[in-house]
Amino acid sequence: MAEVTGIKEIIKPENLAYKRTRIMTDNVLSYCPGCGHGTTHRILAEVIDEEGLQSEAIGVSPVGCSVLLYHYIDIDWQEAAHGRAPAVATGIKRLLPDKFVFTYQGDGDLAAIGTAETIHTCNRGENILIIFINNGIYGMTGGQMAPTTLPGMRSSTSPYGRDVKVMGNPLKITDIIATLPGTYYVTRQSVHTPANVRKTKKAMLKAARYQKLNKGTCFIEIVSNCPSGWKMTPVQSNKWMEENMLKYYPLGDLKVPPEETVQNANNPEKK
Image: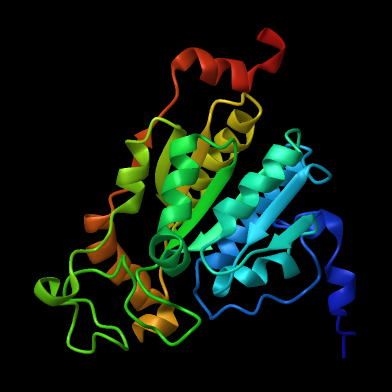
């Protein structure tokens, strides 16, 4: 019989089509299968690594699924109380203005208990990046209704669907953020297809470069799924997201900087 080739003999650098990003840790991701958090983590790590920001980056992660992020990217981290990440990031950036400071927050955190911090941080134009994962539900704590839960959407606290007459309308907080004078770049993306992953990475690269211009807050919403909270398989949840979430939260840029500053960010030697 021919000798079976060992897996270690196959796994060589020249055979790897998709290798681990250098600043990702060896910790195994603990997210549910199909969750968009892992993909978003990978994009964020790639941007920090490719832009040479590892030693300059300071991330702020509050509670919920977002709090797990500091296990996976090898940079400096600061945990924040529920909803307070923008306030903590503000203090860090003002004390250390040369650092690349960002928050990573879910919809229950950013658009519920943290609404005031989010709105006022963006209105002041704090020079940070806010990454907002919107899956329309409280993912870690039991699948409760969130401010972003769609009309008619079921959750553990709206088992018959969200009744707008009783529970109010979903909060399109990113649309509100885009109207504030302190925001510089506001966009809504997703990570459920390869094409959308590329668009999200492009948006994150822009935001990282824009922060160097000291022009105000950058805000990236990422519409994602929650297979566990939605009680669906990963494939079903992505399909449901496309048919429902993306109709209510359409993807694309909501606020873009003047073309001149965009060119300066992409070509710093021409400033």
